[in-house]
Amino acid sequence: MTSTGQGADRRDSDRVVCVLGANDAEEGGELYELARATGAALAELGYVVANGGYGGTMEASAAGAKQAGGRTIGVTCSLWRSRPNRHIDRLIVTDSLPARLAKLLEVGDAGYVVLPGATGTLVELATAWEMMSKGLLARRPLVCMGHFWRPVIELMISQRPGCGELVAVADSPRELARSFPPVRRGGG
Image (cartoon, rainbow, N blue to C red; front, side, top):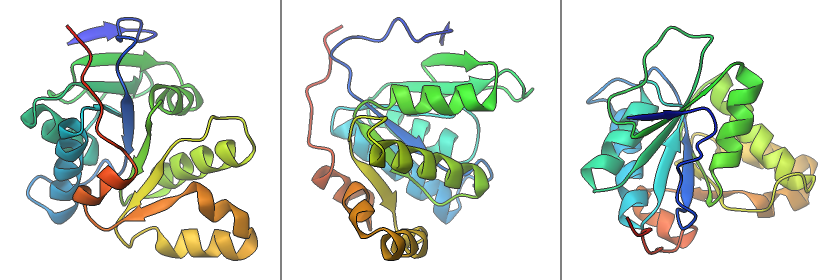
């Protein structure tokens, strides 16, 4: 694992999708397997998979990416004593939660996939969505997996109809190719 403060060793040709989701998904569970399949699908499309670097869906999406021959980036926070998961190739350590969120959004230059989660995942989804809505972040795919986030999306669209064009829903990892076209992997 390479550890950097800024992720400076990233290749210019890399396209990175950041996968956001819960820390408490357990191996073998439905959510863990969805995250694993999501990471694998993105890697097969040629993307580097980034995430928060810890357990649950973060571990699963990184494991799926590695199993598919892809590379991974973990963005962690020095506030926690948890160790990064074993599937992370490159580690970026931040010193606060706001810095971690900002780095996750920055690293995901090709877009974001949002898995079911709790308040932390909600903050990540809302921040990416709002920043793109306000023009503070370049538009890129923001895809929520499955039905979990549909009520939130529908509620936001009922309040501000135009915001719906910034978010999509995929019912399965195979559908991610609609939002994330295949890319050539960077040379080594």
